[in-house]
Length: 487
Image (cartoon, rainbow, N blue to C red; front, side, top):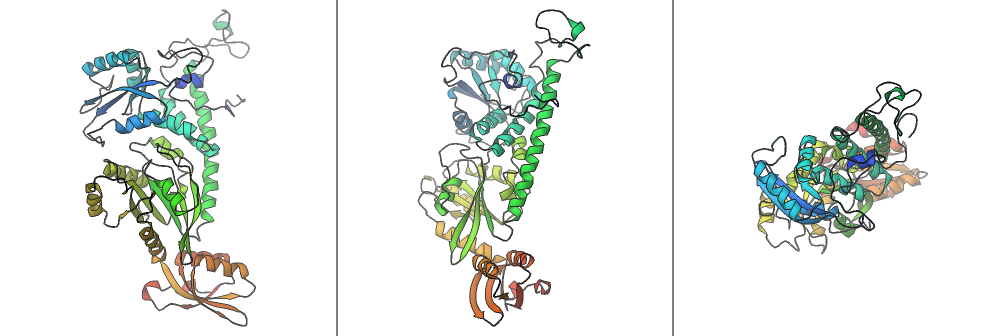
C-alpha cells in the first residue's frame, strides 16, 4: 500500500468462492459461517448451490422455467446446482426476503442438499444477506453479485478488469457493515499491551474500527479506478472520433444471442464463440465488406441481460462507446428462446440508459435454423415489421441484411461532383474507399469525379482535405447539399 492508501497492483476482485472481506483484508478471517471443504484439492471442487427466486408481480421471466436463466448464470460461474425453489410474493420481506415458512424450507433443503452457497435471483439488501446467512449457516449471494463474479472471471484485458473491479467495489462498499462486527477497535499505544496489538507511535487514541479502514481503502481504490477508466474513456472517444468519416455499425443484444457468431460470419474477425453467457466482454471492431465498393466498420459489444447491475453498465460505458456513437445498431435476438420478447425489452432498456435509443436500429431474429416454434417470430414481426429473420450459423437471410445496411448507409447520402488535384493521391484513395464513384474525368489540373457519398463522410473529407472542391450537386431533391458545403 502506498502512502495515500491506494493498493496499486493488487487485484481487489473476488469470486463467489470467498467473501468480499477475505479479499479486502486477507489478514483477517471472515466471521461469516462457511461449510466449504478444506484441505488440498478443495479449491478445485465446485460449489454446490441452491437457487431461490422470489417472483414479484413485475418480474419478467419465463414462468414455465423461472430459474432457467439463473441456473445458466450459476453454471457459468462454475457452481453445481443441487436444488431450487420459488416463492410468489407481492414484495420482499425486510429481514429475509422470503416468508417464514419458505425460509424454514430453504434452510432444511440447503442442509439436505449439502450445499455451501445459496443464490437468489433477486437483488438483496445487506441486512437480508446477513440474516439469511445467519439462518442458513451458508454463504448467500444475490443476482448482481453472481453476474459481477462471472464478469470478473471473463475479464482478460486490463480495461475489462478495471471496469469489473470498479463495479464490484461499488457494489461491495455499502455492504461492508457487519463484516467486521466481531472485531474491537484497533487500539493505539495506550489502548492495550497484549501481544499482537496494533499500535505504536502516532497511533495513540481510540484507533479506528476495521470497517472504517476498509471503507477508506475501498474509497481510495474506487477513486483510483475511476481516474484510470476516465483515461480509457477519453482514449476510446478519440478512437471513435477518428472513425467519424466511416459508417459504423454496432452489434448489440442479449448475452448468448449469437452476436460473435454473426460477426465471424460477416467478417474475418475470428471472434471467440462459446455457448455460454458473457463469453466475451471486450469490444472488437473490424471492416465489413458490403460489396459494390461499400464497406462499414462492424463492432461487437458485450452482451446484456435482464436486471444488469447498474454499476456494471456505468463501469462498461467506455467499452460500449462503439454502440453509443454508431450510425446503426443491429439488435440481435435469439428467436429460439421462449423469453425473446423479454430479452428485447431488457436490451432496449439498457440502450435507453446509454442514450442510444435514438440511433437507427435493425432487429435481427437470429437462430431461425433451430427455432421450433414460429409463433414468437410471427408475433415480433407484427410489432417490429422491419425485423429480419437470419441464421448466423447457416448464413440464412444475411444477403438481405447486407442490402438493408447498404440502404441505411445511403439513406443520408448525396450525389455530387467533386474536383481533386493530381497531387492529392491520398484523397483520391479515401474517396474511392468511402464513396460510390459513378464516373471520373481527368482534367489538366486534376480529376473530376461523380460520386454518391454519405453527407457526414463528405463533410469529414472537406474538413480534413482543403484541396477537395464540390463543383456540382446532384439533381435529386432529397439529396441536395447545403450550399455552405461547397468550397
